Image (cartoon, rainbow, N blue to C red; front, side, top):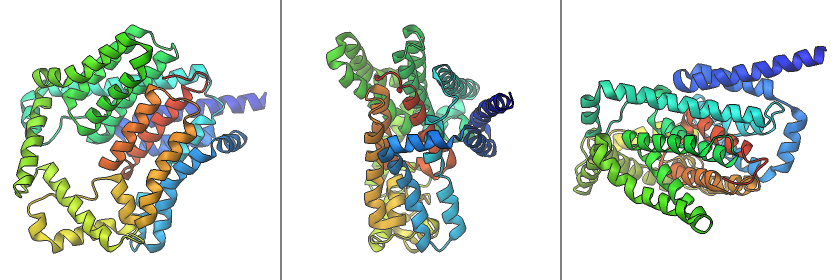
Length: 406
């Protein structure tokens, strides 16, 4: 009787922590931390975790690499508080998959609940953004011509929110594969989120969406010719439709082309993001070349980058001061050759280690998009990015345990 009462309280505590986690994703990093800690404590089951790690050793090693490299770089980091700040943000990368995938409460019914919570909350977030856009469309259209984006939840973190939006598409496809959602609602959800991605017009979301469509086309080429042709039409037609019907998407294209032309003519204009990224890449290249063997440690990246900008006023011009614009560059700059080799190895181990659960559209799209985004963006340099990555991965795998497919 007492054991059952404790188990029920633990289960209720887990679901309360999940609610707090999703509320935190949208509104508060403190609630986000509370949700992660709560779900970890209430979902902890040592025996099941031990079995899970034993059965998925390679994938767990891959996840652990993204934490061990920053941890080791503390040995040669001068700024210990900054090193610890950047390292602890990556702990969810291994905590969430282990806790969720070994969780005793997550049967098929509860996994469906998690899917619907994730998909529903992201649709709600998209509607909030659209509502804000409708009341401020003139200001937003002007902002897109200057390289800025519309309001999004997640504390205006458009990069991580974009990844969450495309994650909702992957989970919708997986739910369809498991017959948790009927075909018509899934099509409506996917088309709505695809349209929103073109309205938002961020690189992260657009790249992930078209990579997903390419993966889907490859998967469907032999198995379903009609769906293959439909997906091919979307690959060709969506950019044209987006350019005609979504002013932010059109303005973003013109802005990017203008920014690139300005950089090619060696004019770095203050406020133009792509030119500033190229200047940051040049700075990263120089810093890395001088510290290739060991790196400079995660704690000293900010100070080294600021020093480079201070000592290169001609090269940097009016460019915005940016940290390394790629997660991969963060690891190389911090850990040298170790980071250079460990980073792609970690991605490969995660992909190969979990592939036995799923080898379909959602799983392959997630990993392909993650590969490109980690080389082009910095999702793990804030806590929310590490949580989104590990949460989407965990949900795709949870939806694949009993049915190989999407």
